Amino acid sequence: MMMPQHFKEKGRFSIDISMKLDAINKPFQEVPPPDEAVVFLRQHVGSANQPLVKKRESVEAGQKVGDAKGDFAVPVHSPVTGTVKTMRQVFNPISREKEQALVITTEDTDLPLKEDSVGLDELNRERIIEKVRESGIVGLGGAAFPTHIKLSAKNIDHLIINAKESDPNLACDVRLMLDRPESIVDGIKLMARALDTRDIVVATRTEKGELGNFEELLQENNIRMVWLHPSYSVGSERLLVKEVLNREVPSGRYPPDVGVVVHNVATAYAVARAVLHGEPLISRGLTFYSEKTGGRNLWLRMGTPAGHVMNYLEISPEDVERVIFGSIMMGNSIPDWSVPTSKYTSGMTVFTSAEPDPYRRTLPCIRCGYCNTVCPVDIYPQLIMEADKKGDRERLRRLHVEDCINCGLCSYVCPSIIRLTGYLQNGKRRIK
Ligand code: SF4
Ligand code: SF4
Image 1 (cartoon, rainbow, N blue to C red):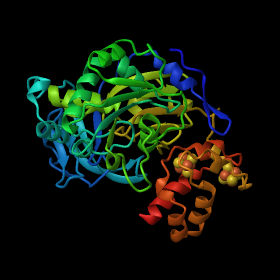
Image 2: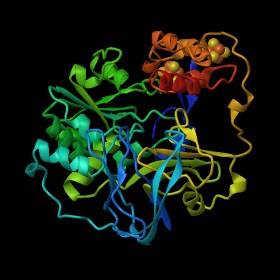
Image 3: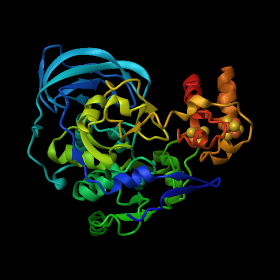
């Protein structure tokens, strides 16, 4: 890969991407399922699911075990064949609250496919959307927004496939494009059919030619690719629409309001597996990094406790100070190793005691304004922090805290090592 060692950002600073580069050439390793899978009943943005199974009930891998009524509900499926041991409250690193999870004892790790493969041409819009929902597909870029809702949008003239993977610790999307290009292209075609659009753009940060087969397949299928400047800063759908199509998405509106739908490249893969092969979303790829192992791309079932991954990679507790789930710019650390992965989990990064959490040494704000300068959506994180500390909801609204895309750049550059993103997330919750 020919990527630079750093992303150069607006505001004259750079982000080290050595973790990403360490993983980028490593094919996926399949992690065997855990003895006990811990499956959150809600693994999407939207309403909570109800359990569809009871304690001591047998379940098959791929069986629906939680669902709810309503557009914003997305079912969850058992990642293994086994028996429901219990249902309990488990810390969810996304909401940072305890949420209901099924604990399923694994008895068989095979993945039975539910139906024969169907041809792409046999499917109409309604059937694709229904299968996507029933298979539990959500956005795999980290947002976990229900995919069937985005595919139901009307009057869409462009589908953008977000393959830019700008997070400095993640390489699993690039790896997927290298390792499984055919299924991704099938998924893109299914998405375009559901949206009834022929204008498709795949946006990446790699260099021309680096994605080999994938690029050839796109060309054969008349799918355009754009090569973006390698930087972290375009961190949201809204900014991507601007960069790729030069179209503004107004504050408080969404890309479909301007005729565009954005889907992550890994979601396209999941759509193809679900719709064409009857495989619900019970596994995904993620990028793991620790000093001991370097970067690795792992393929694992949802509901795999962090401790199982550590055992698999022979990492002992003494080697670990903290573990962050997801992007290191936007993710959260977990309180202990029992926390399981979910549809949200795009990465796991292990820090040793030689790399202590810098936010433990926070200093007072010196009002330098650097955080405001680097914000890609042009809001004022420092003022938002002050408003949040005072609990001033009116001011938080006036400062447009809801426009924050959680990119983490303000925290990253702050010379006083203040974790501004905590205040921003809190501020958003206050005005909700
Ligand atoms: S970068 Fe940090 S120190 Fe500077 S204004 Fe923002 S919060 Fe204050
Ligand atoms: S306020 Fe901070 S986290 Fe939010 S978009 Fe701006 S720089 Fe990113």
